[in-house]
Figure 1 (cartoon, one colour):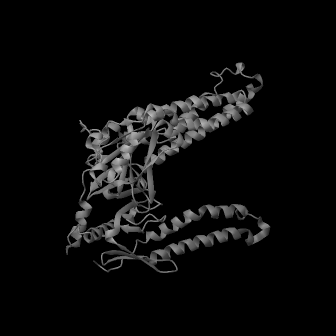
Figure 2: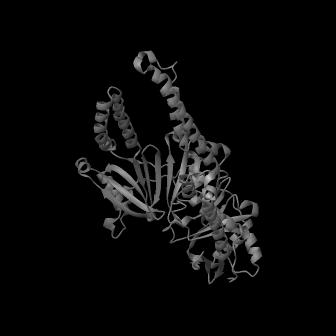
Figure 3: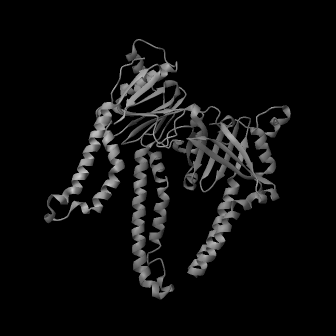
Length: 509
């Protein structure tokens, strides 16, 4: 490996300046505003501009510090390590063995694209304990980024050491596999429109429509509130509607920008995701880091046959928040098997679930009644007769509880656990037995009386864990799940194969 030390592109100085300025802009504006924006009148002379002078000095210091950081930053390759030297006032060194590097994530921002540059974030197996990545190269050329990848692959014995380094780099750059998934413009628009802001839009629209005097018979309501209802509430509802509409449009635009040209490729046992319009990102996820798969369907998408596929990934930095990654932001549910089988050969989606017993249905809504009863009583007492509308919470809660009860179920075969549940959105979780970190049975006093239990499973996700609960299932089924998860020591502790449901092969056609 070469011991030549490399520098970042000079644009790094400007990027560092903007990054620090973004973090400090709010307190700086606050200081300027408190001091009246430096306007003290002509009689005060130069002293009226003291706030602006301080502000300018701070900006100059930030710019100079960005230049110094760029000047002092160096990286090189030595003894199968990526070595970095950096620091503003104190020089620091960081050595990262290539064998520990899990992924190299690339970002092309607005300032990177005109110069053909990328930002590289280095993630290791032991990373994720801080808000920053293990290493970040703010701005380097694409060839330099591929050189880092080449050095890493050579250290991991995935590439032969060749004297002609240029050829090897070109091979890495030009090697492109066929995309496993690419989001269409239609799917991107549906994703943006149903990402959550659409609910806000329709609720605001309902409030606005309900205020039209042609529809609401104001004469039948209390006469003393007619003027207030016709003018006050209508104007307020109109303002609220406009705010919600703007919020929805903004959420649609942001989602469209973030997921533009979303593409998935699989190379060298890694999932490579590229996306973004203004800031193009390239995220690499080793298949070994993926701990579980979640399929989420909110009610609107469930009606239209769409779903979102999320993977739980172990490791990653807190700043990226990539412990739950949208692998397929939006896809027809009938197409999920076809796509995921190309990535996970053992994946299956439509097993015959074992549902929780009917006697456990009350547990899905009883706790809601406990807190709703006193709240409804207080609301009715102080806001009678309109407070009586709070009684609608009880049938709504009961209906949601029944809905959740009908959705809850699980399935196991020799190596996989699949759980299906609902809060409001329907979620299906696919887990491999070897990825489950722990499984716990929890039985409350009331559950014990009717012979039901809850099973809690934990997998790695980010720097912590992700929990999946099979709620209020039959006690015997809970024991089967625990026995399934327990490592087999003797024949007496193994589950007989006939106890497990048959996992039929699904016809993808």
